[in-house]
Length: 359
Image (cartoon, rainbow, N blue to C red; front, side, top):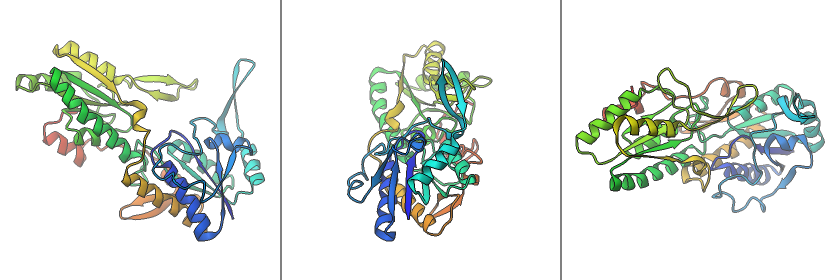
């Protein structure tokens, strides 16, 4: 049997661990061959964008960030965009992808991705491609799994940044705002905020009042606190307001969020008179070596994906339901986002310790 593997969407620490586990399990346990697809679904639009994966060329990649196969947010074969004569054309290129999969001799395709990539994978599955999904996103917003690999490393990175920001904020008696990723989910902001002892945490699931934020920071200063830390999820939005958007597609789809940290920092300074600085953590959250938890989870996911292929359970996504790795239908996996419960345990714990969510 020959299986293909690709990673789509944004990168996440642990991608190489999945690729390694898929390759080694397929080769050593089943004697199969593995073809790596270069640059996500873009690679399936050209049969030449592949590389043979072996136990040799996947050695030593467990602890390396990024992905040896490359990844991209572009290349949706069901809505492939090209520019012809200065005009953007959107075409359905799925027939070409199906033909290339056949030409490559692939008996199964492992798609490592978040909700966008898995939706494409599900679309290919409905056209007859034997697809297995592996959940990947630092945002941790896939509802059909307890946690996605890459998330814990992102939280570790954000928490480490908060530890450093505390000392400089205290030294200068400032408020420091840290903007973190997460798109429409506030998991990184929430877990890093609690772990990093933030005073205010602003997440998409709880629209915030700037009056409440300013009130919290003013009270802290009056009580003798020399500094404060505010964590802002990139998708956070004020009551009655909108998210800060950096870039949109022609059809209105939000390509890139960002800027809410600057907005919140400016408002804090003008409302409280406290010197305020803003740090945007950005792609530092995506880069670097995966933490041990993500290395192990990604390895378990990759091995489980091969077992699903062996059992011909196509159209499924591997899922972590502690303590077990199971699987769920791809259709279920992409049906809803996993968002923070505004009345959930972590929010209540934080509020019980004096953290403000601006409500």
